[in-house]
Amino acid sequence: MLEGPQALAARLRSRLGGFCRFLRHRGFPVGIGLELDLGQAADVIRLWDREELRRASGATLARSPEDLRFVNDAFDLYWTTADPSPGPPSPTFDLTALAPPKRPGPTSPRTRRSGSEAERSPVAIPLGTYSAAAPSSGHSLRPVSPKDLRAVRHGARRFRRRLATLPGRRRAHSHGGSIDLRDTVRQSLRHGGEWVELRRERPQASRAEFVLLWDVSGSMREHESRFFALVHSLLSVSRRSRVFAFSTRLEEITAMVRRSGYRRATETVGHRIDRADGGTRIGHALAEFAEKYGAMLGPTSTLVLLSDGWDLGESGLVQEELAHLAHRTGCIVWITPYTRRPGFEPSVGALRAARRQIDLLLGPEDFESRWPLRPFPLSPTTRGG
Image (cartoon, rainbow, N blue to C red; front, side):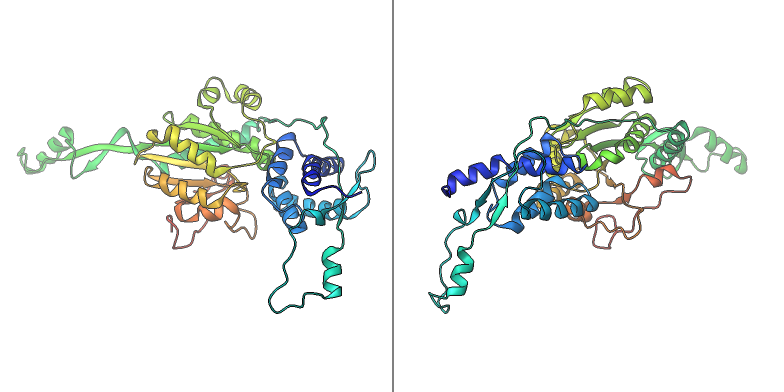
């Protein structure tokens, strides 16, 4: 017996977790947060549209191109077979009750047997059940080797020297600034002791001020140990820097990282930061940062985003917020784990929307090698081009 549209839609939304259980049974990690994201996506899509449901599943559950292919294959298997998931059999429902009736066009015949029968044919979709025993997922940060950590810290120092905007202890010759008495006296000896020319100096820029926004969502899980070594190294070479972790919400972890050495900080941060099973909303994180901490930015600040660019939110919001922050900071750097992979192009979600505001696009390999930084070439229309 078929149910009404509202009851059927309610049962469908309540049982989307069966698809997540089906993925977990095949070794694909899906936490409670991702299930909730899929349920929220179901509230804004047309549930009777198979392709919309497929795209919503990929956008909420996949964290990389490989994951997206896996989810799409599992989607076809799950929604087209009688009962692919383990456990008790799942019922099938007629989803045509959810679709609005189609009105005939002005030129199309009102009664066409083949077309009307095709529109009324039921679409049988097996539904799973929600799993309350879904494994929770956190952050299993592991320390990198001492050799790798030393290499990253050397790279962090090179990065600091390249983006230095604050005066250090060393001074350099300048046309303005204070009088360099020692150099002026030395220069006067060439003119019989007469002070013909006043030599001037000013502090040389050798310090940097970083504001780090670190993506700790599920899509970054396989790279988070590597990226935390970079975060810790950047904070160690720049005392004025601050770091914020974000996935679905923003949290400052500067004191947590600096409170102890690298190994202890790895354990502390892994237990304290937000869970990794939620999706990434980069635009909302940038908006929250601008509202709460935007006053800390200035012309000498460098905003560093460490993320793969996979975003569940609106890409337009990422572009809008970064454009707003670009006017308040001196430089914007994006570090993604895929920059040095063959065939990489900054065309994924938030990264594509942010290209016009990025000054430098780097990868972790730029900090781990002994060679100078090699930014990914951006198009001339970008801010950094």
